[in-house]
Image (cartoon, rainbow, N blue to C red):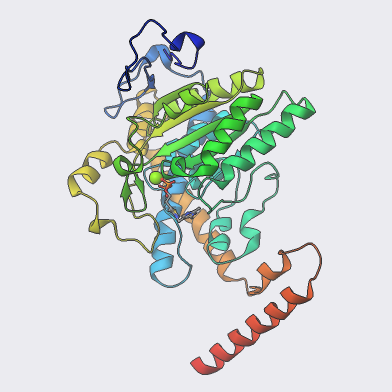
Length: 381
Ligand SMILES: Cc1ncc(C[n+]2csc(CCOP(=O)(O)OP(=O)(O)O)c2C)c(N)n1
Ligand SMILES: [Mg+2]
């Protein structure tokens, strides 16, 4: 039950005037369908086909394996620095499964699992984190926006797209905007939430509260007890889900998308999860993270519990697991091979995209940059 305090009756004229009258008159609901011991809330179990359930599991397993391989490649100097998604697979895969190809996927940089489920090729991640523009492009991905590195900027893009859809009268699609806990401290986030609500646009915010913004813990990010309650000030539903429970992230997003498409306006979902690895390969979490906290969250691993659920349903077994592992390994090997066979890297590509046409000042900078690279490589020889 969500009781918003923004109703006119929130103002109680009978109360004596006092600055410290801050009664908490709202409650935040929390959705969990499959807990960490694989106990299922059968009443809330989503009506998903075996095919969809396996697709969901497959994407989570694939993302975990891609993360692992990319980390090895990065340590060998074969790709650049990148953000890891291990532990957070359910927070993007459940929502991605709830979306149709007509919905817009507006992400940050930690939704590899959801992107793979949506059909993005594995190679894209290798390309993107090695400076190739093409890492953001894929066949059928016209409604998947590029990875946003600028924290919370994508929330404005999401609301802008949703506003355009409302003006065009598109009622068969909506926007899902992914962001992190740290993003809720950015001005862009609040502007996006405000306009989403004022314009009542079809957008669903999925905020992965992974407890960290690099090394800053969630407790130092905001004084609010939950991130979900931030929605109350904008008069939109704000709920919390177990972000490691793929059934819950799927169901909450599906409900919010149905509501958005029916003209019900925006929703904010806080998916409570945990970043099990480093922020990016440039980070060392052992400098700031308590080992006990990490261990507690390892036990809540989204993959382990989902596999247990599939097994209990009788639609998954050890043989299928071994087959999936081999298939995933092969897929990743092929993607690495294809990526490493490329020799078309264009270091000055960013200069192509500053303006639509060539501008003399930018071209001067391009020449200067390429000269500098040449000098550096001559020095190195
Ligand atoms: C506007 C902006 N400020 C700072 C940064 C540097 N930065 C990169 S990731 C990050 C933390 C983001 O935390 P959160 O939103 O919780 O996402 P997470 O990394 O945990 O997925 C910061 C501060 C940035 N990319 N953009
Ligand atoms: Mg975070």
